[in-house]
Length: 398
Image (cartoon, rainbow, N blue to C red):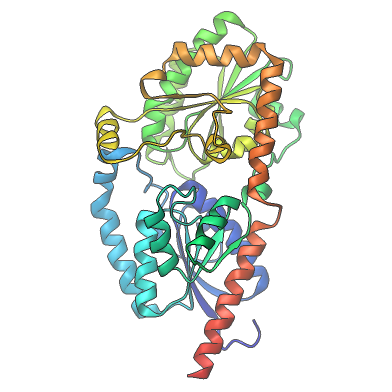
């Protein structure tokens, strides 16, 4: 990068928790390669890097149409401001991570302004909508494909795409030894742990955690030696993405169950758990990487379900490992099927059958094979450097 005049400007836009984590890891890789002026939209992890934070996206996640409608006015204002910023700042590169409904609008504006863009976790990363893929192929300078089949569909659409693999191959690893994790979390190493993973969004904590606690109560009747851990994202303030931590602790205490809340150590919780009861989302793929058997659950409001059925073709599966494999390798309980009784029943099957758990682990290993090898963030950073070099050459030729 020494041949470039001054510091090159990069604007990074990441929505939701997983995008924030991957953006932070990518920033680390970029800063190993050169001295950049980085402006970012992201969450708590991104904010810990030496960047200029433009907006905090940690509360942007919305589940369902009502939640999305509530978010819309704020996000439209942010989008308008960012489009204006693209025109005034004119960054040398726009890097987008996931969050397609928002980020594709930035990509189109960047195309209009002649600003190169790099998209990580591009729209329809599971190739469900050919129109979205075609639109993205037209409006994104380069696509970093994190799944092997994403690479294939974008290549067929004529995009400038590279298969880089998935960052969680490197990131989804426990940080502590097993014994240290038990001690740190106040858990008994002689007793089985079940991880209750409702997600980080406020609506998930409100809707899913109570059912998971009811499930824990049912399972304890069968096996009083069980203990439970609820991993949540680590945040600086008194809330977990708008849900007061005090309310979370009170909910756990009132349940009068052997449950521990663990902040910021989800991979360690996953690694010491015999079984996970887990909300659909990126966490299911992280659990797949770690190799812990699980039951995937999800529930949205009745209104959201009705609208979804009216206007969308519902996917055959919602769990990411099942989507990758194209079959129901991991049990799913969705909407009305997600009850404490049903979830306890599926959990008992896995807890009592070692062969069933081993089969899940084999299926998980097969799913992870679609995510490439270690070093994804480094490969994405190299794509960014090539785009910056090409932009500098084009500027020099003018």
